[in-house]
Image (cartoon, rainbow, N blue to C red; front, side, top):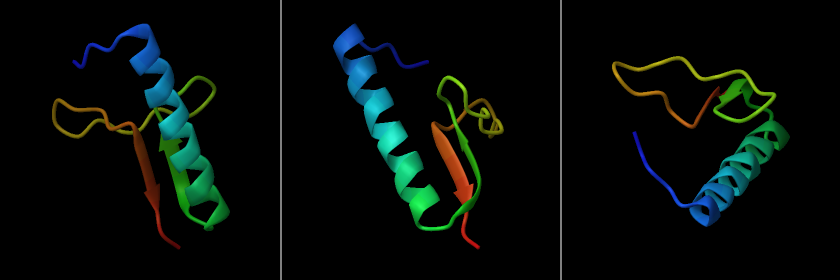
Length: 56
């Protein structure tokens, strides 16, 4: 598990949300993000990615 400061956490969330919106705008499907009010990505081994999507 990654430990971030409050400031780093905010920057990380902003970056993941920006990437999520970018992929939505590009028409990607099945978007999942480890963010509040979003579907959590599927676990890969012992790891949960911040963002997953599929290209149409």
